[in-house]
Image (cartoon, rainbow, N blue to C red; front, side):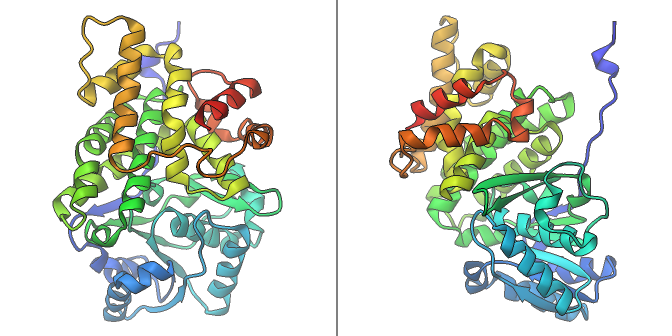
Length: 387
């Protein structure tokens, strides 16, 4: 019989630096990577907050020219990636630095592989479909949640089909992530909550994934501990860099975990919502997480009980059903404490949308690693419960 303990596993991770003012090292690391002219991918709000100015000053000090591309929406569109690639080529750029959350980072990854492969971004959909590596990529995340700065995932909105596609390849793992808690001090309460719950969802799904491992288990559980302990504190005291640093650590561990263990039904269903209705990704995750946990619980109750223990749930002496309810309640209470109290119905999702949502979700690659096999009918029922 095959010994699972000795099973070969591969893990991917970029170089990363974490700590106060890590963003100010952009110029040094751009030069280390041979950059002469970097495309800075970002968004208008990040520019107005002043974080891009810090990065361009660092690049100037390192004699690295820069061109800014800020045409990125939440849930980045395929045409935005193609426009960014056009700017990259016309400006003569040779590297990419992204300052932003998950949307700019995913867009930057798309720009990189479009530039190196001379193909439309949608042609890279799926697993290991990127032939030529992207130009050097430096990520400076400005949220604590998406984990895109250390992952081999990019999620792009296919605007014609109104679905989100997943690009999964080690060729889009960033060269380095400069993980700095300071830019989080200007993050809005809503984005703090949404991205924080995104990180928690990454960790929960990675831990119960059928592709989990001892390596990703350690990362996922520590992320769950950090986010459940510090997210509310960061939400209440947004300028407290100590709390922000802890949530950055939580996001980092979550990103490393899901990049190597993948995700599950929550993300498959959230991607479908983002593609069809353009809803905020982290908020969708928060509203679906409890319902998917309830569906998945019978497949791995021991794993969910470990999650509960890490979150401080101590339902000793209770029956299995009571323990399940207490663990799910702990997760949903955190969501409510940071102001995520809506339902999908409150966000405009209607019952007649569910068949299309479920048909898209059932084809999402994240569903392959869900611990319990989900049918189209199962997905529809979970959406109905979340309305």
